[in-house]
Amino acid sequence: MNTVNEKLAELAALFCLPGTIKDVKVINHGNINASYDVVMENEGSEHRYVFQKLNIYVFKNPKQIMSNIEKITGHISEKLEAEGKSRDNVMHFAHCENGKNYLVDNQGFWRISEYVPNSITINVCDDLDKLRSAGKAFGNFQVMLSDFDATELYETIPNFHNTRSRIAVLMRHANEDPCGRADEVQEELARIKKLKPLAVRFNELIDSQEMPIRVTHNDTKINNVLFDKDTGEAKTVIDLDTVMPGLVAHDFGDAIRFAANTAAEDEADLSKVSLDIDRFRAFAEGFIPELKQYLTPIEIKTMALGAFVMTVEVAVRFLDDYITGDQYFKTLYRGHNLVRARCQLKLAEEMYDRMGEMNKVISEVAGMVF
Image (tube, rainbow, N blue to C red; front, side, top):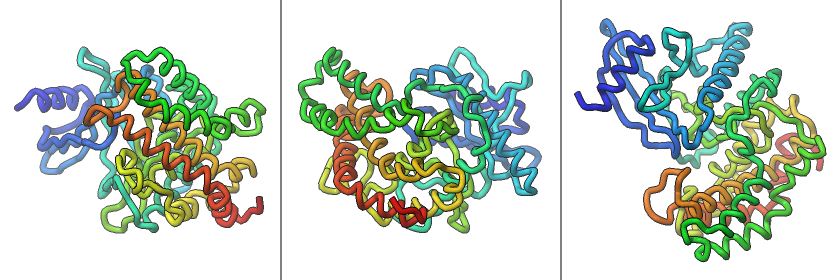
């Protein structure tokens, strides 16, 4: 048995999981945590789990993360039970003997979640039905938490979607130039400065208290939705580390940034990068209808803006990570974060030019005139 498997077996015992480990696979998608797909066998039956070691450089308050997760999964489970619906598709986390849903040892911060049965993830998707279904899953996540008081949750990553602050930090780091890379990115910095007035619009709406703060997922990429292997329908939303107070438009926008891009988010050939309006519409058709009754008019009217803002913000984050030495996101080669930043900037600039087109789609889907 290798060292990794020995560690996972030790964790299984500490989290009170019955049986023995039969198979382990490394989960490679995701830029942050170390994850393992583990099959355990107990008295002839098999159960799958996801073992994770959280990246505490990124998530500096992991206990707060797990507190947030415990509260929201409990809330959703209780609502489903009250409605007579199955709780099978809600994420469940294993607990240690002390009742905690995490464990800290000299090797890191660990947690284990049950694998949702008969489910798969999709990293890239141009199937409009699946995008519509993913939109419905994220919209339903908002619906289930529409009556949850966001102030009960920790802000586990302060200023996570504070675009104004993100840009200010980037510019400061560019001036400090800790890794000698600032000269390479002067064009990108200039483009971000040009986009800034519209990119900080949500900061202004929050300052004026025109935008309500809700419980949001904050990482709404399509690979954070589990789909049924047989039907292709979305089953549930996963990866709840970033659930905290936020804006609905950020969730919608980040999903669009990822799903409606005609290329991967790290595509180096920028001629391949553009906004697919059909994908945009499909996700909106899933996300908005059931949720719109819980939203204010300004939340609906600014959804397209959310796509632009989130794309600028992610470009800023990639560029800032490149300037400061690639400490946050996993990279496969030198310059990977710079490639990512340039890809996102190209997409953001196209969204800026096509804002009217995106707003028209939102207006049609929501049945509103604006």
